[in-house]
Length: 365
Image 1 (tube, rainbow, N blue to C red):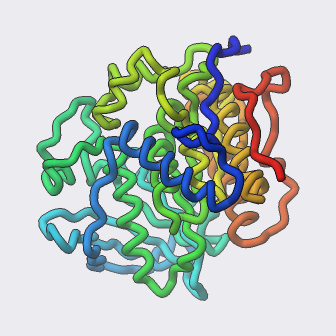
Image 2: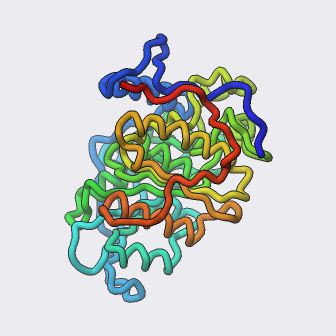
């Protein structure tokens, strides 16, 4: 069992000037304040939104191994800087629509398996995949001489912000397709891709369901509450600083001074649907700390009358995006976006003896 931390999680209902959130309008103001703090300190800001994205079809065919789904590969072109473009692959069920969309940026290292792809299509969901490293590379150094860094050389965004921008631009393109239901788009990702998906969902309200898997520190994990052998803020900054913005280094070895923790990032998703999937033996991703951020973010969902919109799921095992994780996510998506009944428990407590890492609660009438 993890040792209790000495500093509790920051209260998302308290403004930096000391005021307390009392109403939904107050929360809207506080949400903007939190978003500015988190995006600027942790991620170095987001890349600018372009005036447009052109989705140029490269080819289309019927994918016989996927029940004759329509497969189209698109080149997504930045209208303001046409030399910058990347690819989006879209599989659409063979008839009907418009359909909900499963969007992932993990095609760079793990394309969705045939089995899960068929499951997605048989549920009448579109599968859209892109490679986040086509936006900026993931080279374990701060080389800013390629990709989107060249488009915006004077900006300080890190790789996670650039990859999240990729999700946003894919949504720009998807919304031009008459097969897409614009109100039922889900963003999912694993590990650093999970960190990316969570940031994308927190910063784009067009994403109806955000689903980070095994995302750890800088994702759904917790900086202040550390389970055994879990990744710390210092680990991230010392080894992977290029993922983040330069201001985060100011909090190296001073995590208690950070004016937020990752429950605050989750709170930015509210009241839209949010599912965190974790593995109990994936200690580096801090599954106990992730439960603490879930508990804390759920207070915001409760305040907004949306506590059934936030879920968490645990399985035995280690760091992976397994068939079980995918099926849990797809079941949650069916429940949240398609109003399908479910008997699954999306708010289990795998740590019944672990007290909450905070003493504040959602304001009550």
